[in-house]
Structure formats: structure tokens, C-alpha cells
Length: 176
Figure 1 (tube, helix red, strand yellow):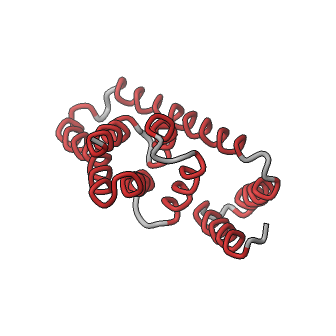
Figure 2 (spheres, rainbow, N blue to C red):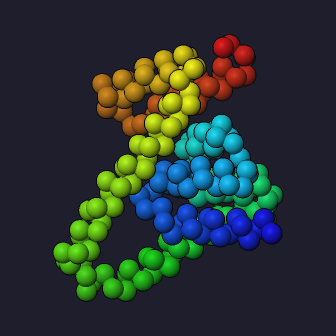
């Protein structure tokens, strides 16, 4: 039965998470609460791991969730389920794109979806920040690297990799 739930939930995520892999995060929070497949802390770790591993973030998180909740078969099901809607939509869109490329309404919908995706991501970021406010070290690292990313204009993945290494060193050597 878990495989049916994995397929259903990740198919929904693939269908409704417009805006990239990070747009899946609100859906994953919901899955964690409903099914108990992972905690909020586990989700934060999943996001960190999925961000630094090769491949799309949403697909990486689906694979990881499927693996932890349903083993190898679960990871294959979750990964397949999250990619099927994109495949179907791309095939359909490619067939009708020429007709509607300059359509005012199509442009308006896409223009409206961008801020909605940003709002979803901002709400998740705020939830994550508020859940970690008691960890002064994590907040200090966050503020330092956020400031550095604005000042140096380097790719955020650079800072994500550095903070991942810092976290690994801290956990490995029990520094904090």
C-alpha cells in the first residue's frame, strides 16, 4: 500500500509544483506530516543532500523519500511518479506551443505563477528559519553566508557546498 501512496503523492507533486525542485518543498512538508515518512529535520537534511548531489532537486528528494520509506522499489516509484507529469505536459505543450506562443492569457498565467512559486519558497524558508532560531550557531552561519552571497555575487551552490562541509565537520567532530 505504501507504493500506491508514494506514486500518488509524488505524481501530485510533479503535477502541481511549478517552478523547479524547490517548489516541491511545501508538498514534502505536507507528506511528512500526513504519512510520517520523515520529520521536519529529516526534510531539511534531504534538501541539503538533494541540493549538492547531481540532478534535479525535486527528483533527488523523491528518490530519497522513496528509498527511506519504501526501499529501492519505493525510490523507483517515487522518482518515476514525480517525472511522469512533466513528461506528459512537455509533450502536450510542444504540440500546441506554436499556436499559443504569443497568447496574452498564456503569458499572463505564466507571469502569475512565478510570484506564487516565490511565495511558496519564501514561506518554507521562513518556517525553516523559525524552526532553527534557538540554534545561534546555525543562524550565525546563515547570516554570514547570506551576506557573503550578496556581496560577492557568487553562485549560491558555492555557499551551499561550503555550508554542507561545515555541517559535516561540525557533526563529525562534535564541535558544537
